Amino acid sequence: MQVNYKKSLKLVVLLISSILIATVSATIYDYMNLNGTVGVQGMSLAWLLGADNSTAGTQINGVTATLVNLKGPPNGTRVYADPVELNNTGGTATSFNVTIASITNSTGVGTAVLNSTYVKIYSMNTSALMGTVTVWENGAQGSGVTDLSLPANNVWRFQWEITWKSTATTSDSIAVNLKIEVPVA
Image (cartoon, rainbow, N blue to C red):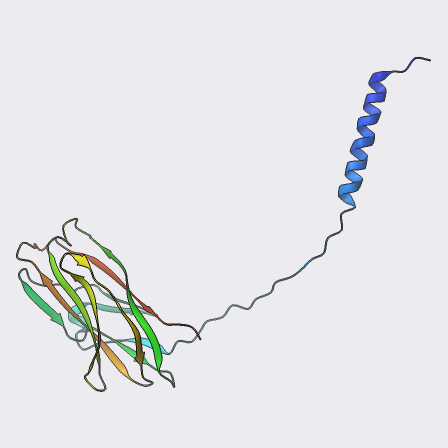
């Protein structure tokens, strides 16, 4: 009796393939589920237009306030006393930090000819200075303020003070992004 090796090899390959398929098919799975409901969180802090809102070009869209028209003269300081305000509509004090997220040198020389930019935060209820964000000073980015606590039903204004060097021109600018960091309880 002569054994046909080709047929035997094919039969062995088919047998091994069927065993592998049966093993894979026999795998049992346990399933777990993760369900979530995604909603909108109410916030106790809200931006308000300040008295200088038209001069500063203040625009408010939800949690974002944008000041599109802040300018200052060369070799001089411009103060926007009340371009935007922060209101605590909640029933308790709200703690937060103000950090400098970014300063973008829009014109390539803006920061070289910028002397300083400060954002001073004043209470509209007591007129007290609550903190100062040094955005830019002495050729470098400054620092934010931490551990501020805005009492319930109080409003604070964000005063901008911009000082350009004498070499600044009307084409110089920077873009500033400040973040209000409110810890979620």
